[in-house]
Length: 106
Image 1 (tube, helix red, strand yellow):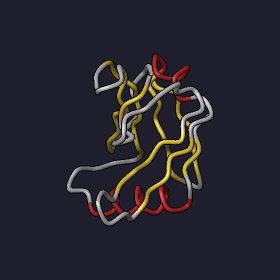
Image 2 (cartoon, one colour):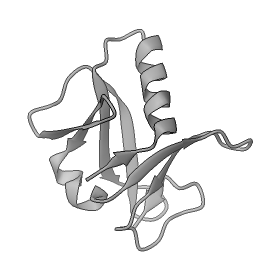
Image 3 (cartoon, helix red, strand yellow):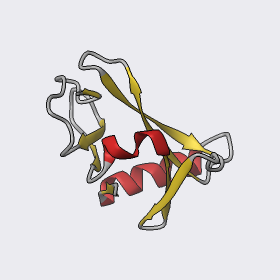
Image 4 (cartoon, rainbow, N blue to C red):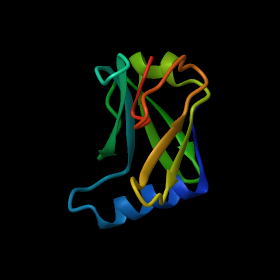
């Protein structure tokens, strides 16, 4: 379903270990908004919600909201250290278009 690169796994592990709040995984969902109609939302989570699917990527738990599942099938998430905008990137085969920031798609 969703894949995290080694760089993304390391970034999530680092965020979890330095978080002031307890976190056992990364929650990912898609919401309406952004410049292309849909936007990626993600953040650390203490536990999955009842409507989450839990997957594991190299020991990191990923909680995917069930309503977002169809939008995210086959997506690879990476973490890049780009000079202008370091952060997570999404390679989503379901997106027909995306904005230049990479956080919004349709």
